[in-house]
Length: 183
Image 1 (cartoon, rainbow, N blue to C red):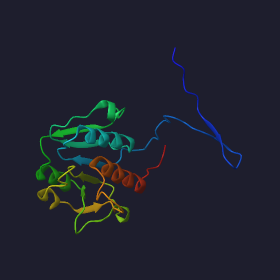
Image 2: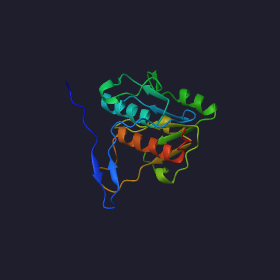
Image 3: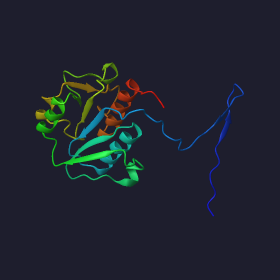
Image 4: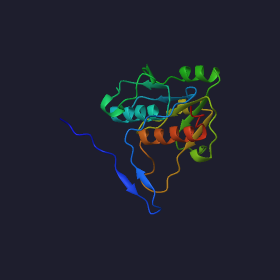
């Protein structure tokens, strides 16, 4: 019979006990987040799976996934049925323009001469976040139709985070700006 791990209790210097809670139940949002993440063809199933896991943690309800990469359920973990993954062969400009015409702001996550720092950017509530490919970033034809381009400032080497880490940071920043009224 397998023993359950008991929670750890730590007494702080203030005398207050701190109890570690593993796998705390997620917060409930009153409505789905209006953030969609578009992922171009990825070279790595691991990166895509980590993006899916981060999206699930952030309460994102839709990912547009392109190419042949597949989600590894052991990495993506328990993202559940709330996250819809829409599969496309490529990330076509026409697809993004359709979202744009329906009132969504297209925000590219890329280092460019005209990008602004992520922590200074005010996300519109209806945002479609386009993440770049691991090696090539966002394709020029896609970059041209972005409404805004944001980048994560780098303070050391290497010059950028990988695609999954960058996507997670950007999703978290959106969530920080739109925490939602917790029910």
